[in-house]
Length: 375
Image (cartoon, rainbow, N blue to C red; front, side, top):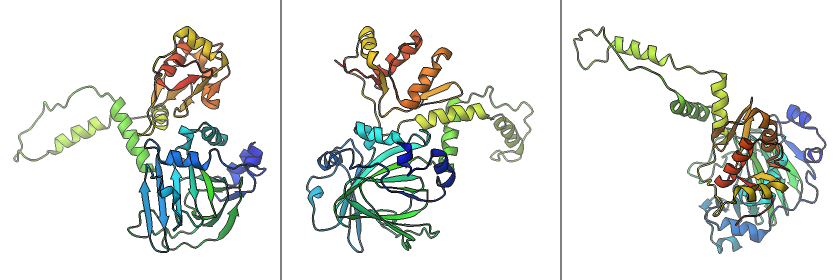
């Protein structure tokens, strides 16, 4: 599958030659691919208030964006080019989740989500660039892709989208169903529908350095514990009572120098940060959870993570949905498999503690028995 997906390249060849370096056009990356849902299903999701969507229209000089839920009438417009984009398709469509995880040759810690865009003839979102890697897989119809490695990233002022002022393409490709284009960060691109078409975008998270620093400081705030209180037994009289004295500054500086961190702190931070669900994601607990024995019977056919869940591990530490989870050493190989494959054929071999943890995740909506015995 990966050989086809990457146009005959091995994962190692792709990572060495293309990943975050240069674009790659792959003809028939997924032969026979026409999408993971119908147009009617896509439009239904766009009208769903719980699904993130955008509706984009434009003429020669003007762009407009409507955030969802979308109106059925807008999805039947004929006069001007338009496109509708549905984010997080992997969270609401099982086949979308399967498609996203075909790209697990990139670490799941980097995998973000699957977006689908539907466009009528001439539709698109204009020339722009992204700060992340993306695979653009063509569903139905054709889309023309113009791409550029230009350094000029000035944007049109006051536009509702980040549209480049001076787009100068260096490649011009038309993608057919099943074709795919990989683009590294900051490669400018403009996709234009040729007739009716859909494109599936597999995106990767690329937090800014500023965001990483801020989130790490928040993590320290939540986990740091420094003993003692501010004290100045050698306090001297000051000429100005409103002055912050140099001695106070020195004492506080000495205190703050006690704030240190090491590699294990970074490991724990990343486990929590990278698995933290997005703000709009909520988990649905079963209305009437299976009793323990019923749960075991349901798991006879396997156990799977919910599409919204992310389970990561590092050096024997496990993290799910923003929380560290202690795992017995004897269970860790099975939980490694669950994290990698996102399902288990069987839970046989797990300790009582491991099974209890799987049951707790089921009751929280984080995972499900493969056999549907829900009440």
